Image (cartoon, rainbow, N blue to C red; front, side, top):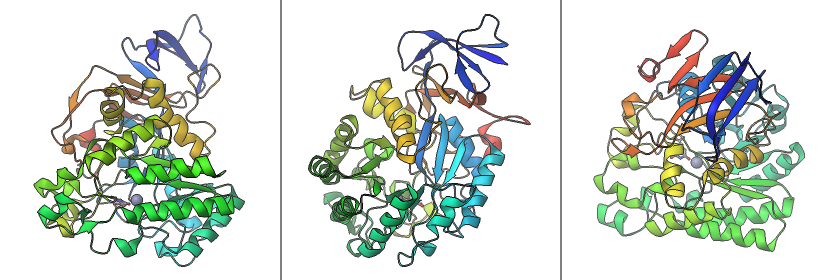
Length: 437
Ligand code: DOR
Ligand code: ZN
């Protein structure tokens, strides 16, 4: 079966036809079995998210591998990394294998489980990293995300193991001693609202420490959701000064929103790390544009209504991200002239695939490459409604906001996972409403 994708604009450049057969991009054929008219649409390699909370096992009231995979496909993703802060924690081969198998059964995106660094995310005893790496899930990224590996000796040992496994340690950089009770970025907004301040040094001091540990061990470090100008400066300096293997991600919400969002006291704006002042936001956009920050990762963090619909200090941190990430990147980076569509492909697909060591994702749109694609309508604006998103949860910070571009089709290894904005499954099309009852 050969599919022709007609008149599509790869990376936003001149229109051409792409041909797909047996899961690969192939040379033009005379009589394709299927032709999809993609006039006006932009093709990018399928997006890769290094930081997704799918909540399975144990948090199924907020998200499942099924609903999270659907949200990912609808957002243009072909691979996601599922964070291990589940219940039970993904700190053993059994749990990572379960998540990996569920991902395969659902089949909408490649689900790669991230293994915990420490047992139970408790920060003291290293988890069975080698066993998780050797499991069928082939774990190559480890993180205690949600919590920091705060103890420097534990972090050093984790990096040493990771180096031996050719894996990467993704650090949630937050010195917990500096954030006890913290609720919002430590500044005038938090002071006015009476919310306990969250010292940005909590992040920056761990980033500084960990680049040193990465330099010492020669291991690969990835900094999760980098959120301050000074964190970016530390990376810039470390790379210029040492031969250090470090990468970093920024979230769409830290590129778009600022700490003033908390002024409505709506915990939908509570997130870890917290939203920062405008100067940090501007610095993060620049750092992403110049490559200091390698990639965008969603930190998609669905929460059940009772965890969010409560007073600020009791609410759990986190926001939905999978279905809004690409439009937010377009708003913050493309519409501002900081990135073109090739740049979007770099930060949303190529760089994350490289960091995670995926051979078949984030590849160029070229003959012989795997047909992992997203087709975007750059002129189709839409309004965000949490209830209409495929996630089980509806804690989007963008409720009612207009997004400038739409994902129209997504293809995973030559199979449509999304057609005309609808999820495709073996037993037919599903609307977002059916997915999130
Ligand atoms: O806001 C956040 N939510 N940040 C994290 O690090 C964890 C995440 C979650 O699991 O809800
Ligand atoms: Zn985190």
